[in-house]
Length: 476
Image 1 (cartoon, rainbow, N blue to C red):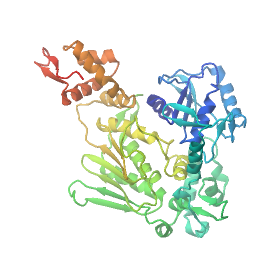
Image 2: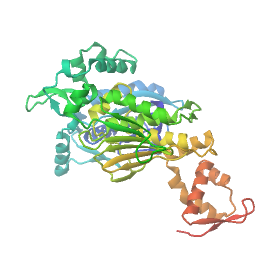
Image 3: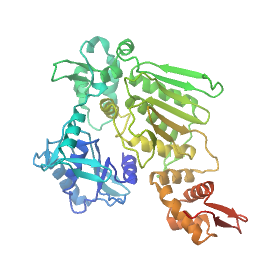
Image 4: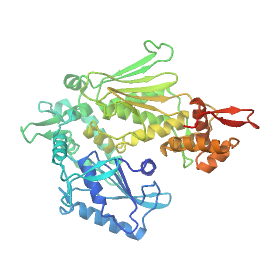
């Protein structure tokens, strides 16, 4: 979790993240953010960091009071109405104590001190007087996700696999320090607790949901109710028109996870790398986990297209039927986490397979650089596609890979490209090492900037590497 929170801070404030210093105690404005996240798409509130992405920390003597005040006010209808169960969690990063919480999107419209707040890229906004917008949000929250469709005639006893329910129970228990509540529940109680067995208050209809069937259903039950619960895993190296190996996976999502992970492990190289804390990690395993979870948690589950995982010699591609929001390439700057199947996503988080919403995008990006030194490509269209490079320039050492990963998460390349050009204008003989020192970034980033400026026709090298200089071709 420490790495996850640190990466979220590195990305800075956005539609799903609010950073607050909390130098003298709990900031009163924190509840406007709580309200905003409840009313929109949820998000993280992190206390002890500022909007410049700096980790400030919180005084140890203030921690317990801040935690108590926060929980108390979240349950105070004069502050948050309807009230919400939420608590702050303590974490230490770089020797400093921070507090954080993740707010899930609510099915209701909430108010903070009588006002309705929503979240956008610039922060929390009061829309109390915008009646049409409030009505639009209300209608959106009434929408029933496909995964919540109730099937009254599915028998818990006969149509579900109880060995999988027991597996989920044990996984959830191993994911917490204390005994998990599922350990003392019957299978039906567990299904209700996970939101996989519901009652429609309007019609009185009750039963296992589509999400419950996809997670725990027997194969014949799944194929009867949702034949689109399938993923085609292909290995294409010699036979590019068809495939060299294939696993067409038509089963529950839990077994599907294991089979897809195994398929990727079978046909891709497991390179080890050092992270920024000098710990040995397997970038391949991290990326495999995240792209497989994406196919399971964020697919359009009733779309007729088949999800696919395709392994080529030089790349790994994952494709999902998708209800897109961006209709184009996703980057760190324009990416906004969105749970297409929140119940399924919450279940995978509960059993320890997944982290919080949005963390997969960050992890795939970071570990792609650690694995190959190259960025992944995310395409948000009718088919959501992630492309991960598999071949690495062996000239890059582990330190270079770490710098590339960190610089990307800090989004320094775009910000330093013009700065690099300006320094070359002022001093055409400047060394790349000196540019890196002046801009406080890695030499790998400056080498990449120089290459991009050359490719775009801004500069060219005159003379030799040692005695030459950079000639400026364009100034705009």
